[in-house]
Image (cartoon, rainbow, N blue to C red; front, side, top):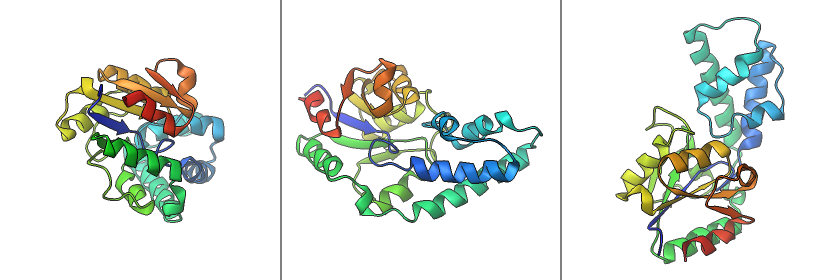
Length: 212
């Protein structure tokens, strides 16, 4: 096979937590008197928590100290985790699990490459806590996508060279990160429109056609 490992973004690929992110950021923005809508929220996809906060603060009239920014980001994350607690294995689409199982039967190593510091918690909520071979997430990186660090770390954790890994992403920043890492990329959802991916997927199951 062309690839030995598949690295998946989490949110928007394996499952969707966009609405929970939106509700948490909206609550924080409302508290600070900042206008926030779904269009702004879409700019936060694949972006680290602190970088996301800076985007939210673009419309803020005042100035927050570094300490106040840390406190705001922590407050958002605490609300987000409370919302994530509503998730369950029902939030994992059967097509996703069936495709993951099929990839594993082909002998491929599977990893998560996510900027989220909540990746392990989310995976546990949807019943995939111990499923992936390795997890590279916001707890082990210092630079968020489109920097390739999260995917290069995932490949390193798998013991694979970047060139034999395929990244699955739903955001332009993630596709850019994969290309910067020297990896092929499969785009799904909104990422298809960027035109930068090696493959464009209509459904998650289409991934099987990319690895044969």
